[in-house]
Structures are given as C-alpha cells and as structure tokens.
Image 1 (cartoon, rainbow, N blue to C red):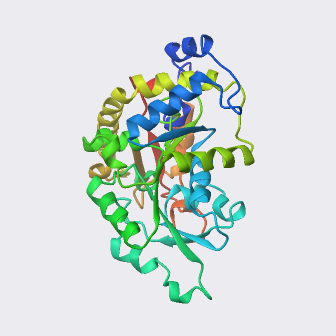
Image 2: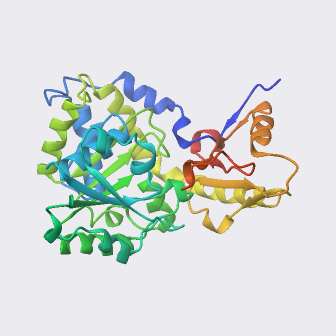
Length: 347
C-alpha cells in the first residue's frame, strides 16, 4: 500500500508553505474592486518593479492574464495576433481570444526550442494594402519558457529581435511568462532583461513559485488601467483579495532562489530515465523543470501501462497525446509523458 506519493504531473500541484499560510492569516485586506486592498497593491507593485514595468495587476490565472493582455492590445474588432502554433495561448486556453475577444489567431510554426523564425513572423504580418479582405495584425505573442517544447528558454537577444520587428510594423509584443522565472534562472539573465522588449507580460505565481493561486500581468500604467476594467468585465474582480496576494508575495520573494535546484533535479531525472531500456529522453533539451519522455518503438510496455504502473507505486506523471501533434489521430503507443520537477515534492 502506497503511503506517500511523488507528484510530477505539473508544477501547479504544489501546496502552500507554512510561511504562505502565516502570511495569509495575518494579511491586511480591503476591497480590491474599489482599489483599496493594500496587500494586493503591494504584490502588484513589487511584481512590476521586478519585471521592469510601470504597473501590475493580479488576476485569477495565467489564462485570464493572457486573455486580458491580448484584448487590451487588440481592442478593435478584426484584429489579429501572431503566435506560435504550439504555444499555450493557441492550444490550451479554450480559444478565448477568439470566442470572447473576437481576435483572429495567425499561428506560425514553433521550432523545437520554442522560437518562431523571425522571417516567418514578418511574413505573417498582414499587408495593410489588403485590409479590405484581411484582419489587421496588431500583436505578436511569445511564450518563455515554452512549455510544449519541454520548458525551453527564449534568449533576451531573440526576444529583442521580435520586439524590434514589432516596433518596425507598429505592433505590440506580449510575453506569456507563466514560467519566466524558470527561464531567467536557467539562462542566468535577470528577468527584467528577458522581458525588456515586451509591452506586457503575464507571470504565473502558482507554478514553479508555488503560490496557491494567481498570476500577475505587468505593463504600462495605461495598459494596466485598461486591463483592470477588462478583469472586472470577465468576472475577475475580487473583494478582499489580500489573503491570496499575501501568499503570492511570499512565493515571489522566497521561491525564485529554489528554481535552480528544481532544474538540476530535472536534469538528473532526465539522465536517469534515458538510461532505462525502452525509454527515450532528449536530455540536452531539458533546460528547466519539465521533462518529456516517450516509449521507444517496439518496447514491450505502452505508455498507458507504464502510467498505471507508476501510479500504483505512488508516482504521478502526465500523459501527453496528439495535443502536441498536428495530426488528428488516436494516441500512438509511444505517447509522450510529461514530468514537472518542483520544489515542494523533491526538495
């Protein structure tokens, strides 16, 4: 009988630390919809400062943060956003930018390292002379680190080039920085430098940083003013928000330093998995805290059987299927698995 489990499904499964619980218990709160919660304001200000932006706004989730950001930048019907064909916004956010915002996605192929070719991005920008038939390009979105390519990191130099391209064509740049601190630690580059070229950034506090819930979006004061109104429109305005923000503040201040250890453990785990007959891992591609591994063709065990066997022994991983493929087909027997190493389970 298993009495203790190791949960590697995602870095979202972390539990609040004692320091977070204590901060929540003593948090000073007020009505944040009225702009009066001091703990929420402190978190938003600190996040903006760390990211090198003018202002910040707490939101319930990264999906909400990305949706609000896209809608602020694409506030005219008929707008189009250029984004990776394998990015989180395009694959895992219920098509919200289209279904709620009326924004048309223009996907560009993601490379194995999470980047998009600069030339392909520029080629995807609509020619204004065709406005009678085309949507209007207004925004480019990047994701750093890039989850669906295994937590790969986009360099500051690459992001700068995309930012320069955006400015050249009068576009905005948004970064889905759900794991931007993982990228910062892995690259050894300050987080504000990584997002310097961006007009807005969404930062998740409940993944690698371990807060119980929430994200922060940062940008200019004008951007955040519009974002705050959209948050209310989407039902994201909360009253005594400080209880949640107090835990998130602890995560932001105390847990970034733990990410390097997560990355080292992920690399060790990847190397070990790759030595097991029948499994295959691209160890060189493990840059942060996410590992993809698959079953070698011809192996006696399928991914589904391995998944269940691991579960019996208290090891939880995540099955990945054709969600990571362009083909609409049943899951193959060597379906890829995902492991996320995070500080609570493996410290």
